[in-house]
Image (cartoon, rainbow, N blue to C red; front, top):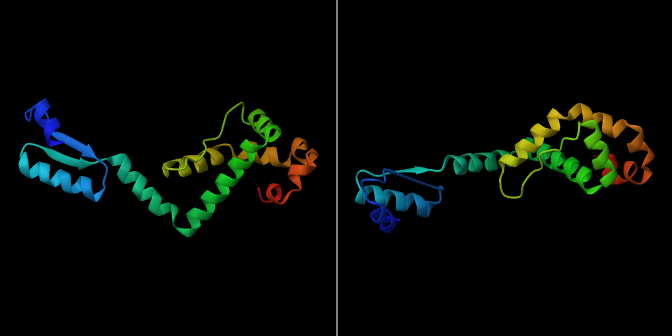
Length: 143
């Protein structure tokens, strides 16, 4: 990093932002010692992701997140249910949780909450009940 800062010019680089790994923190401290006009800051998105990761581990949240993922995954794995969900939500999709970004877990829950009335209608409607394979399956019952 120091080489790149020197290539650009020490007078032009006033701040660097990295994730919060111990190696990046140490490198930031070293660079600030070597270049007094430089300031290292942790990446805010990475900080938030780490905080949300910790929150996701709390039992009440982890259960809610698991249930939200279950509902979303179920809907998106079954074409007829997905088509009916889109009818009920005005052709809107749900935000689906990502594997690596913990914020998407909460965006998924927010999306489910936003469309809760349409989803309630979906799972009590005729299309749902006429599909005996899904509506009576153990997973369908749980969803």
